[in-house]
Length: 550
Image (cartoon, rainbow, N blue to C red; front, side, top):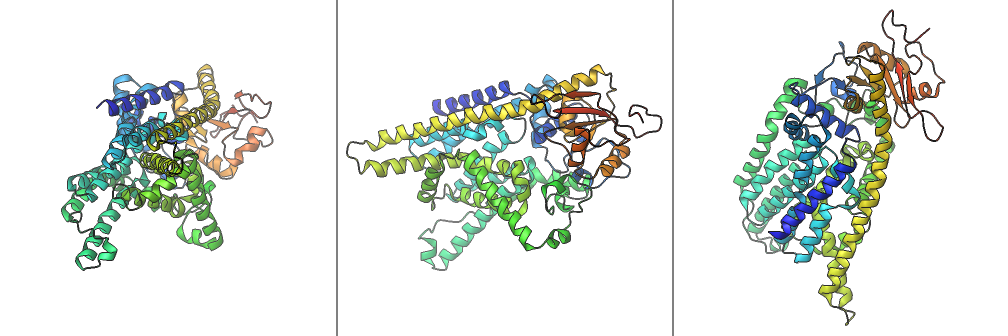
């Protein structure tokens, strides 16, 4: 037990350090999960007083436009559910939101060791791969965020492991894999892909058995073991539905669809990523097809290339790629890694065909993080295979000792990439955080009422830092943004230089003046002397509001 306990302790320590270095949410996903968790803990249920994207309210300007609104039309609630009890006990603090991610995420290190041992790998493989799961290179920085990276990391890996155990005859493990797949789907929409992987493994195994019984021994490779039972398959599906069934019923009751942003086309049929944040784009299948096959194929190819780049950098830290390829070739017929191959294929297929425009924004990273534990095992296996091949050609080499040296050398290199990448990314996050902290102080100093609503590009982030309700500024013309301001009776507008609706860029630059936006009452100057990092403007949409002048 010493090895798994030590690996768990290492993983906890790494994630605790990440949280200590940057305890707050850093981007819209994590802001949203924390805001929803705080609403649950405060007794408001699954209701929030901000609109982070109009896809959550039907992809148009509602009439009437009201706040609060039901939450989780797009992002799913598991992480918020896990945070809420800690927030209830410890209050709405960054630490309360971080604790479940630290504890659950750290399970991935001993789990990786267990997967390697179950696959018959040498001890050094399990230990080195466990360390790589504790500190997974460039992906490490995201594991301290209060969202589902840390949850999906062990959850998907455990699902694949249990599915593999089912292939080797453990029917109960296969059924339990369905339960974990349900939890993964409750964490993210694309978690359904892991459920699909389980189903494909079951179907392929039944087909193998059928072909074997018909005497096609060459196809079956003399594998005459009993297939995964129908009972295990039904059990896996039943446990999946035990998790997802109640949630889908809630979605049907509240939104009229089990996947609102998919059914209305907002997530699937956009032609550019700008349309994701637009209320005038009309993302329908007919309009999507009308652009022609050239742009469609180009966008799908770009999604695949971006996903491959994400995998190479964040999952394999670049340096592990050649070893991973060797490991994949050596284990291509292994039952222990068969489900991993299936899910890897589905993950890339999803990024290529279902949501390619969302890949540059990080969608594939969430899907792929669960691939990392098995990938680390395959990478260390690849190192040992290569070193063993070289050792046979160098009589002075001890293959086992040399393999261990090379394996731990690569682990050190991956850890170094984690340190470098984490520092750079967190510095960028802090560059966005500091102006928002200053904004919160300014709103207090200006005695802005707590109920005043704010227009911004990241209403969830502004809610987290200021406590004010708000609405996202859509990526539409200025008159459409004005209609949003009037419909929701917003009182203030926040424009950030590094992330803003395109129509508001001239407002920040001072080259566009409209009567419903007043002069800035607060701004955060930029160190480079350029446009302000952030500016706060009064919004005047009611008669008698003189804050915007003439």
